[in-house]
Length: 248
Image (cartoon, rainbow, N blue to C red; front, side, top):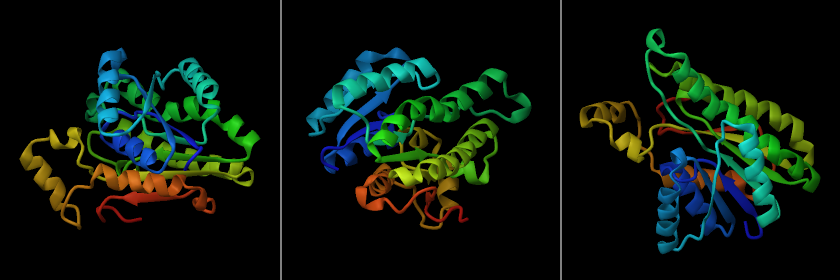
């Protein structure tokens, strides 16, 4: 991946960090976008921590739910790094609630950040990829976008929508050397999952045939595989990383 520039949205979360680090190891120039409620100092602290570990990762603020903010981000990266070769649409949030109690705000926040962001970011990247006749787009979905999940109608709907987005766009750009694929992680050992009460987490693990949570690095390796130049014949696909919890 030398001489390739990768943008990872939501690059500072558990999975996002692992993706950024792994792409760096592969020789890519990596830009991690963040929101964090506008906490730029926290973002700088993350960047400094990565540098201490040997990962030189650029950071840029963006609101992925806002079309103009995404345009500004992509324009800045194009100017500084001469384009984006690899796009990882990873940004996402949860606002869990039973549907009968879910507010319009909880619904819209998840749809905007998890699904609308697919359009907002990719729309500003795709034309340059078409001109260069090369690109790798990898969209991070979820096991719950495939099987659904109690209390996550908003999240499951958004993540399911990513599959349709991926398959349609893959057909449009296939002849231009651009691949578009989806990865659907199951339960991964991130800070969010580890913060769940032990008894609940044990019940989750009991449903996973391999008998453990996934590791962020395992998702990152799959991303790097799909992002490689050698993976040009794989497009419109979904790679499940869920330890056998849901098979389709």
